[in-house]
Length: 332
Ligand code: CP
Image (cartoon, rainbow, N blue to C red; front, side, top):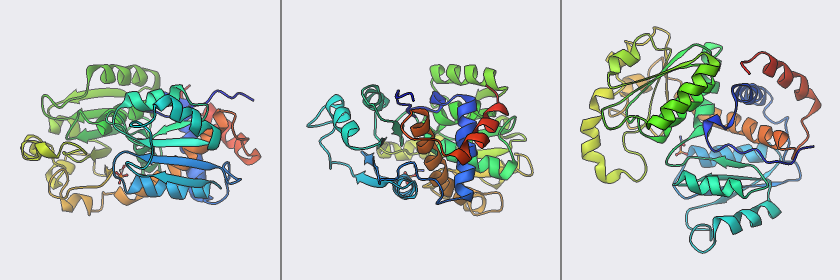
């Protein structure tokens, strides 16, 4: 059995076939919520927060418990990591005691260093650069409401230089989607991330469009997404940002430009009447609470998959055939 740990630090850490397997597993885990126990023991999973959270904290705490494990939540300022103790030493201590480490932090370089030195899976629960667990939950929601992700148009409006835009580019391309990202000049995604997304889209039959034109991005879109205009740590820029992003608000006029059966997603928390109007987020096309619930199922599936792929848990017999079939049916 291999013992090289698999991590989930950025959306492209899963190949298209692997992402599809995780999403299949998430569907199974949603249907049979308490049937899979790869953390039986109970084994412990650490969930560390350097920033505040509601959904991420609750979904990982509930999810680790439902997988048969014991969640250990570490709030900002409660561990030695990063101020009194190096990332290397912390990684070596964690792997002696627990089975998985989940971390919400600032710099991507920090979580990359933790993973490089870890014998157990490390999961990104949001960094300044990516929020890949959120996008897995979004993709599960798209599959539920549209049957598949392949070939659908997903349009993101707003701060196009933030972690959500980056993860939509990479995760959406991995899922074979046509990802359109629209924001104002100066707030568009980094060229290296766009290039990585384009490379992934070439493998899957998806495509990438980056534009400042919200209407162009919205035309006939199947999925419309946005995020707060003021991410954690940007509060000093509030006044300037509210003006900058005004033209990218998802209101009734904007959603009317999308396909008639388009769905609206938002990772939450949402600021009504700013990045999204109440009419849209509380309206018939909104799937934001399905999306929030799917954090639980998608992350449970991800953790189980990482443990199986790392050789740290046996794949239950009843999953072997469905997962093999899922892999065969997807882009390799
Ligand atoms: N969407 C999301 O990550 O929510 P929290 O910040 O509340 O965890």
